[in-house]
Amino acid sequence: MLRRHFMALASAASLALGAGAATAQSAPAPLDNPGDVTIALVRYLSTGDFFQAYLSGVESQAAALGVNLRVLDSRQDAALQADMVDQAIALGVDGIIIQHGLTESMREAAQRAVDAGIKVVAFDVNVENDAIPQIEQSDYLLGKLALEQAIADNGDSFAAGYVYVPGIAPLDRRHVAWEEVKAANSGITEAARIGTLDNPIANANANQARAALQANPNISVFFAPYNEFAKGVKIAADELGIGGDLSIYSADISTADIALMREAGSGWKATVATNPAVVGEVSVRALALMLTGENPGASVIVPPTLITQSFLTDNDIRNMEDLGSKMPQFQHADVAMADWMPLPPR
Image 1 (cartoon, rainbow, N blue to C red):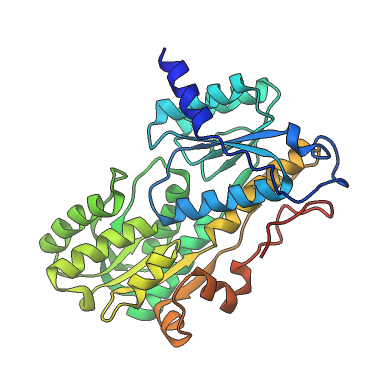
Image 2 (cartoon, one colour; image 1 turned 135 degrees about the horizontal axis):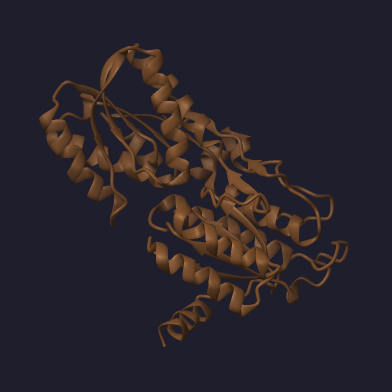
């Protein structure tokens, strides 16, 4: 009964995006008949602007190809996400994008999909499977660039707060950069570590950050390598009246984040990001290449860019469209491409 219930939900959430899509007459099989192709996006994380933008990129690239898209959202329920992979297998989809999740819960589920002859790509979750390409933002570099900016702004000696939830692949990769920076700079101390993925993520982390800042008034820098984490730290700092005294460094960006970074007296000094919509497009394109027998590579990397508070204000950037006009790499990444592949309208 429960399984049928979730399959009904999946069907209700289906997005048939073939109508009005660009034709793909020159595409290789099976995408020469894209209306007969169905792919599934199986999500672990969906809360926040980043994940909404990622979804929009998946939807727009699927529409450009003319394939059918089913979206299955586990809302951070690891067991349900694994079950949703099984649902996608039972529905007979041709390809699956696994978006985030836990290695221990997704490893076997992903293998079941491969065993069923379904092409699979994984975004920001390590399923430990050589047959499954990993879509990445170069998460290590996201963390490294943000921390280099923190040192440029604050020197190499400061007490820091840090937001981290282990077991999430992108956060684990960013964590490597944090540990390396601490090891290379003895003056940087980790005064407090917090972190939760409880919903709502920003507010849940704000509660932890408030306690950490009250207990450690010497903290002058907070490394919060996910934009919802950074929002939480900013909420806490503003409530404590120390927003102007705390420097926050993060990863990922959205229009809402740009507004928060540009607020008068905002402590959110820099973030390192790719356009999540572009990452969504790349995820679909990598899967499309696999469906046609091509190999996108074991690791499909979308390069990130440092975005500072001063850059946003100096260029009067107010949204992601403005950012794309000033940073062309935010409009498109020349990754997982083929001559026959149609792109979403720009």
